[in-house]
Length: 69
Length: 204
Image (cartoon, rainbow over all chains, first blue to last red; front, side, top):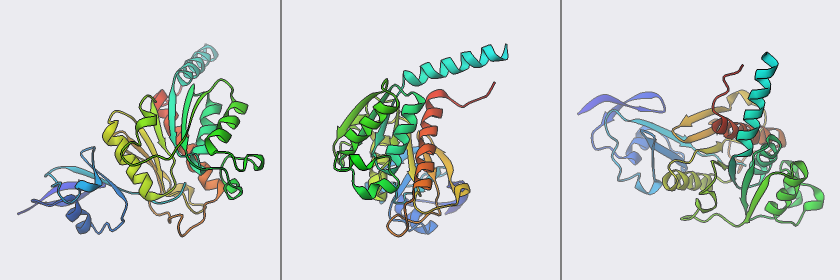
């Protein structure tokens, strides 16, 4: 079942039941290897991307880290 | 009356900055320039962490001098900070931040600035600070390489993470790092840290 329900980087996106963070990143076409993901302002450790399920109505921030400093 | 109010405002600000502490992770291009700006601004205590030594190649963008080549970056930077503002307490850690304990030097600072160079370390550091010190404001930067495009740089706030971000920038693996843009983003980070400490400037 698909419902219009989550926001990824301020963009409205369909919520997919049982979708993990990894699957969401893939669906969004975010192929950057180094990202910070926050769901409702809570940081998701990179090691948990493939087992954390994205809840409905959540706000997700995906930040792409680029080398240089 | 107006003059009197401005003086009160500036004294309040000076005191608040003097009573504050900021940690800087990495003192290469971003961290060395940000530290100097914060010392000039009168931050009371700076905790600086890096494991590198000053090399001649660094001088194209980092706040070091030819006569400091060969010194550890944290010692060289401490000397420069003291030459600018001897009242700043500088805690210098000559060490490499290791996964699993990256938050250690920054437990007691008011704001942490991520000023590392490589994307992987940046991501690891931000993740660790946000997980282990959840109440700590973190200022980070992503997209420093290249030149021009000032207007693409923006502050992105996400809870306690304040990111100075140019999402269209290239990686420094494939693009140049040049002093004007590096110093711009370093000062952007320093300015964000000051804003976190003082609260938004509502003018007067």
